[in-house]
Amino acid sequence: MKNIVGVNRHHDAAVCFLKDGQVQFFIEEERLNRFKHEGTVFQSLLHLKKITDDVNGFALAGLKSLSSNYIDCDNVILHPLLDGIRKPCEYNYYLFMILRLFSKSEILYDDYSKKHHFTHAAGAFYNSNFDKSLSIVFDGDGSFKNEWTTESYSCFYFDYDRSKVIGKQYQTMEESLSLGRCYEKVCEHLGFKDWTEAGKVMGLSSYGKDIGLNFNDFLEQGEEWFLYNETKNLKDFQQSANLAYCLQQYTQNQALNKILEAVKKTDIKNICLSGGYILNCVNNYYLKKHLPKDINLYIEPISSDAGTAIGAAKILYYKETKSKQKFPQKNIYYGIQYSDKEILSKLKKEKTKKSNVRDVARLLSQNKIVALFQGRSEAGPRALGNRSILFNPKNKNGKDIVNKIKRREFYRPFAGTVLHEYMDEYFEMEGLEESPFMMYAVNVRKDKVEEIPAITHVDNTCRVQTLKKEFNKNFYDIIKEFYNITDTPILLNTSFNLAGEPMVESITDALNTLHGSKIDYLYLPEYEILVQ
Image (cartoon, rainbow, N blue to C red):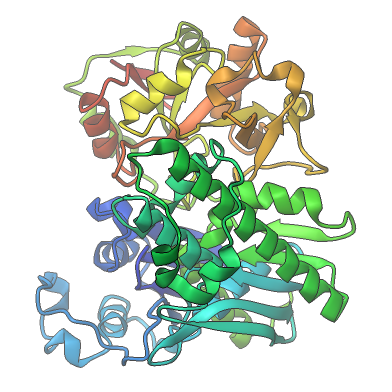
């Protein structure tokens, strides 16, 4: 079993390609069709066809409902390669796409779409470096138990011989809300567009204070809770921030208690965490600070539903091969590898000049906004230096400047990337040896707050990426040159996109975003080209 394709076909749809157990390719459909949280994978599968047509196994994840494997495809325009397939909603459409596109050999097919939390948990365990662990899922919703009841929390035991359920909780559609659903409902209540903007509530929470709201009642009553509590929408900023603060405090305490209960029950000290709620980097730092020091924590960086594509593929790989070889997550630059011809042809009509990392660092020190485009895109929602917008963290108005450029709310914070060797000098890492995937919002050391105001949030925290040279040499070299100029080994690093858009994937996306915004420059370090 060499080559396996994993597919998540729910929201945050994604395709993963494993070769001999290792991720070779991963892409979310939204990066290709430019629709946030897209639920189909047509373009992703068609692109995978360009990489390989030798597929031995296909693992499906993502459809949480009790309904069959069918989907409503009445409005789907079929690609010519799929001509001859009868009405797609009569079949498992994605299976037929796979069979049609990858037909060199007989394909082993497994469906884990009704084991949503299991695919989350498996992906986290197999991406960790543990021989055995508990793998805990904190999510918005999981698979349906019956017509009105879904998974809300799951804890599994994993090793390389077996897995089993340690604990599981369910929620109805309106009551006993999960931690993720709590965030979704508060997000909606505060007047945001929909639940997918729950990350804004996390940023807002840092402006709030404890006003004694009882979220235990919220969990019991669900949406009816709002009828008995006087809260307003975002027209009253402070009251909204107070609600967000109470929500953050409640959910992170619940997560901590669940982990401690699982450890006490099993006496297992290795913990993997995944599920949509685990994208909450404030929660992750809280857990790191408050869990006993002998507990080893792995936070899955692709914790959204997109990551279940990897989880499903790895379940099938280890099931069929009986392998015990570990493939820990070392980097997540899994996107499309564009050719020199594709990239350079798009730059012919642009105003460009040859520039090196020293030139770029100088521009950043002069408060220019530089977008960075190189290599293969990052998996997951965090920009890690291949599709990033960079700015001077020392600028006192930096947060306002970049939020305006990205068309985001004023209260939303920005991340920082620090050279690994200086992380403890600037941040309270709480024993973390590194934070390469930007999954923790850590405290900024008090004597450094004034030095890096653009990335220091109102509560003196910063979502931090620690960077080693071997992880991303070009990005490292830019920061090193910035350090040589400014004595600060850090850059503001935010995702290369504008509000409401998916992260940039192709050079065309990059140029469109550059010209559709007030970003000053686009830098391609592999070609030493600066686009104005």
